[in-house]
Image (cartoon, rainbow, N blue to C red; front, side, top):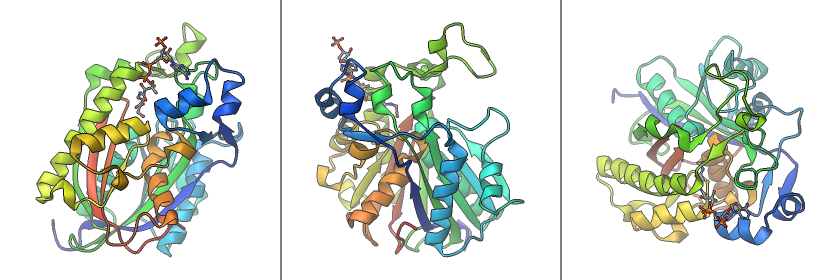
Length: 332
Ligand code: UT7
């Protein structure tokens, strides 16, 4: 890496819609129970955005908080990870930038669904490494509840809405907060395992209303998530010459507490090092990792100097991971 061209984390922000929907509320209208949802997923409650709140709105809140945390609203690019943009066309990032008063900067969306935040971090790091940007706002925001059929007990209880963001700045590879290397992968032949069949350009109008909602082969996705996150995490640790014992906190995509514990077990990482906030937010897709980072900072569980392993997995299929040493940064 050229001197001064490493991406360094300089700010963190989160935003959750105020409406809390707990498992009891869901079990009053769905054939499910608090006990099933808690024991199979670890989720107690999730946040659901009001109908007039969009991905752009949530991203603006989280992005503004990250800029406050970084103590500067100077950024020259914005990368928004989302699978639920306000419109199919155009991307949502330019609108987020203009609402943050950043009109004019480079702004684009990255869609790697639940792996989106790690993909967006890698993209932003690439902009910095190439000298195309000095400071980048990276936001993960999804309103995934709207992609789920409210009457489908197999998907609706799992997802929640939210947004999280970080500011990356150009710096040195040996500074606290320097991110990398990255390990990223995909398997498009397995796209059908988690898909929204209609609404895109291939099938603008659904044959069945249900085709506008996500369908998921949960057990197959579960198995891939555990194996691929563990495999990818091992790869980045190997590239840095680190052992699993060198990891202080594992911040994996919050899809299911059993997936997080399964991946940790495959890695040989003690459960106490697993950061988990899925109980209170559910699976928030691209927002999940920054929201988990913010909660862990607020709790005092994530502290400056901790070596943090990030790993994500999502529809596509996509997965990836990276490593950083936590800097002296608090959520804004
Ligand atoms: O963000 C990345 C993408 N998403 C994921 O990573 C999700 C990955 N998958 C999972 O987390 C799990 O597979 C689920 C939580 C979705 C499901 O857990 P599971 O242990 O794999 O359950 P299952 O799908 O094998 O279903 C077991 C039983 C079934 O009943 P039968 O066939 O055994 O009679 C389901 O119909 O549980 C039933 N079931 C439910 N019961 C009560 C499925 N959903 C529910 C529900 N409440 N909400």
